[in-house]
Length: 396
Image 1 (cartoon, rainbow, N blue to C red):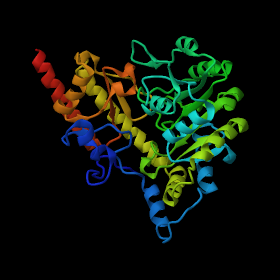
Image 2: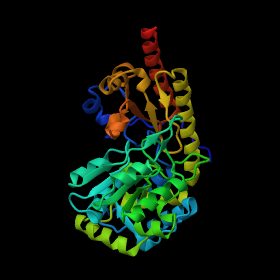
Image 3: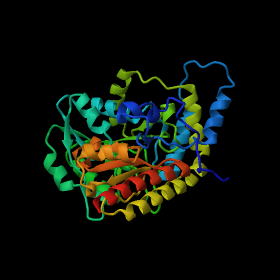
Image 4: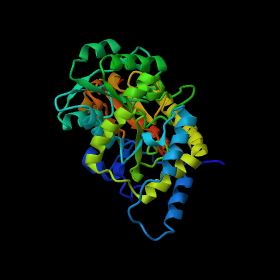
């Protein structure tokens, strides 16, 4: 089947977060939003058809998430990532952020340290502070080619007896890394030595570009299985964030009981009946769509890369291995963070995430969501090129 990503439905007259919050976040409606991490690409037909079929039944009461939905995800994780989860390992969650909060509550006490590897998705450190825990920053290192690496030596110096949890972003948002086995094993060795639980956010694991291969942390070895809590779901993969459904998988029984104790105090319930059928349909029928989508996404990234190469003194595009989030190194523009944000809003008419939101290490960077149609990508490139050309003309 051929999939067309040249255009997408208009979201401006819906309650889409990235559009309704433009005025509040950017001070104007006159920006093309490319920030919050959902896609301006139509959700797969197989998902929408499953929802339509469920709506043929006229009662929308409380429902349990069916075993068949969990089993569809389990089969997907085994086939796609070699992760052997069992039904008993699985918990429903409405979001990864909620799961992070539960993990922090389950495995730490107030005042304990939680390791966060910046620059990273902002709820990683916000969740820690909101729950009265201590953020233990272990910043990633960027090499001369723009790739980010773990700083294992720094990590070792940051740990004390009260450090209880590490929040791992794998693949990483916003820097786009797919961690290699040896990199994950280095993290594992430190965490095993110091009895630290690893919460592995793998929500972007299906959005990996060849030849890179996602390795689910809990599959490294028996030790990883004992200390890992894995967060996975359909939200990013199939543009289903609005269904508010994800899962947590914990392979070790003792770790699972500790998580369950905190989980049951929250009353997650089991989500909505429409989410259940959408979730299952995505995993059972969505593979062909995903393959085509990733080709389109990578082509969008290559178009952005080509533009940045025209202005290498202003923007360097961080190499990408996964996600649909471009990490733009704008330090060459010589602007302070506030000025950089204003440049994108006022000159390029684009609404992006400011790098500083991902931690101090994001200063001078911007994050651009390129999960958009060909037409919208063309508009973004044109706006940014014209803004950069004006800047270039002003300096010459």
